[in-house]
Amino acid sequence: MDERRTGWVLILVLAGQLVVLALQGARAGDTFLESLGLRLVGPAGRAVASVPESLGRLGEGLRTRGTLLDENRRLRREVEDLKLRLLQLNDVAGEARRLGAAVRHAAPPAGRIRAVDVVYADQASWLRTLIIYTGGVETKISQPVLSANGLVGRVVTVAGPYAKVQLLTDRAAGVGAMIVRTRRQGIVRGRGRGSATLELDFVPIQAEVRPGDVVQTAGIDGVYPRGIPIGTVTAVAQGGQLFHRIELAPAVDFSALDQVYLLDFAPAPSDLPEAPAP
Image (cartoon, rainbow, N blue to C red):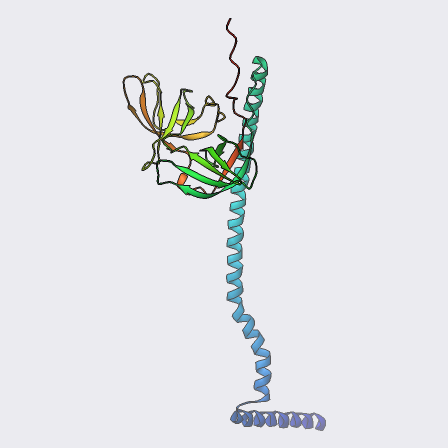
């Protein structure tokens, strides 16, 4: 019983001394208990303070993940649509080949394309031209020049690694063209300085033409292959007693060309021998 009493007394004495030390340390501005408390409470407070920031990052990550999932689903749908369109085009191409074989039809070669840089553009004069850098690769007079959207023009001069291109908007330019919807043919010409539009000539007034009709190369001029987009009909009026006056918006934005494509296409020879008289 005395030992227990002695133990409690020692505990009370130690507790009293700790209190006294704490009070004395508080006056000095630092205590062992305070340091101990800071060591224990500081990390806990830091962890608690970081909880909102962690939750914010978690929420942002979840939102980003949701956005990526939606984008992934959208891209998957687009891929599926493109696959279906490709299958349809393959079916059409296969049918065209079968029909061509049945009638022994041989289509002209489409040729290859190669990219070249535009180094100068003349948009102000009547002669609408581009200067392109070909890098010394063989370039031919009257070689077709394209952009990703359609027909640009043709090569008219070659000088070493450079070549001059006559644009469709040049007044002296002319292209055998065809209205896709009706297969009606005509000639597309440029309108020269001050105009970024084209005109389609020699379409009879009896032919149906309306705004929105797509016009492409007809492949009848011996220079351009068939099927290259030229432009879209924007206005139709009677130009005379025989033909419409048709205005086109070009498929190509000629003021934004920094790179074009040369088409390696073999045009019809200009010196084909005439058929002998019967």
